[in-house]
Every structure is written in structure tokens, then in C-alpha cells.
Length: 195
Image 1 (cartoon, one colour):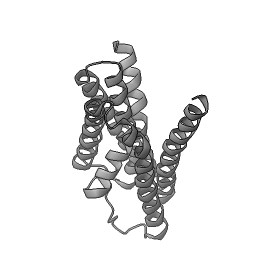
Image 2 (cartoon, helix red, strand yellow; image 1 turned 135 degrees about the vertical axis):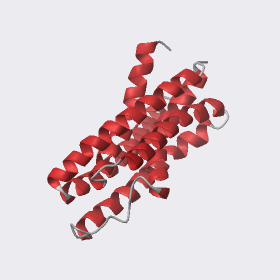
Image 3 (tube, one colour; image 1 turned 135 degrees about the horizontal axis):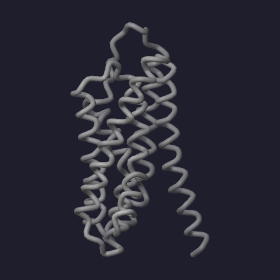
């Protein structure tokens, strides 16, 4: 895989992490170093690990992963986005947010959901007989950088527009989940129709 293609793939994969970071940044105002580091590290780590897992899985478990991965990503993003919307609509302005997206299961759920596409890239690399280590590193670093950028932009928007940005962030998470699910189901039907 040439450098330009690798960067293009890494940027494309980082778009989900960027969008989720925008939504998370709206909740994390003021943004401090720790939550920023936690999210950037975990999003980058999962984006780097998923291609490796996909590459190692190769053809042996491809059909199982392909069958369920989009449903897992959709479910995680629907749940987290729905919770974000509910909390934004029911919480007082001065109330401390109990659901910090940079902690615990919420952070892990977001990291997994945004990196499912990278798993498919790893499977593709295995089928193309490409060594995965350098692509995985680049994908992880680009995802971390886009996460930091998204967090800063999201925090700024959250300060300007308050809970409306949190509601929009929840809607964005649900839409990303829907896009993942729709793309996978549409692609399945298109491939089935061709075969």
C-alpha cells in the first residue's frame, strides 16, 4: 500500500472518531488534559488494534465478523447517543454531567463503535497480502490527532451553544450508527444481487 493511499484510508477511518469527539467535546467543557488524552489515546489505540485483529482473523472468521460488526456499532452508538440526548434535555445547566464520555464503559463503547470500520480494513489488508503493522500505526496516530481536533472544536461549540450542541452530538452519534448499519446492509444486498 503506497503512502498516499494509506493516509487517505487513515483519514477516512478517522472521520467517525472526529465526529464522535465533536459530540464528546460539547459535554466536556472546559476541556482539560486528562479527558482529552484518554479519548485520543483510546480512540487511536482501538483504531490501530482493529486492523491488526482483522488482519489476524483473515478469512477464517470473516463471515461472522462481517455479519455482526455493523449491528454492534449501530447498537453502541444508538445507546450512547440516546443517553446523551436524554441527559441534555433533562439536566440543569449548572448540574455536573454524570456521564463523562472520557471514562469507563462509555469511552470503551465509543472507541469500539468508531473503530469497527478499521476491522474491515484489516480483513481487506489480509486478503491483499499487505503487512498490517505500518498501516495500523498510521491509522491509530491519525485517529488520535482527529480526536483531539474534534474535542477542541466540540468544546468550543458547547461553550457557545450549550445543551443544543449536546443534543446535536447525540443525534450525530445515532446518525453515524445508522450510516454504518445502512452502508453494511446496502452493500450486502448489492453483493447478493450481483452474485
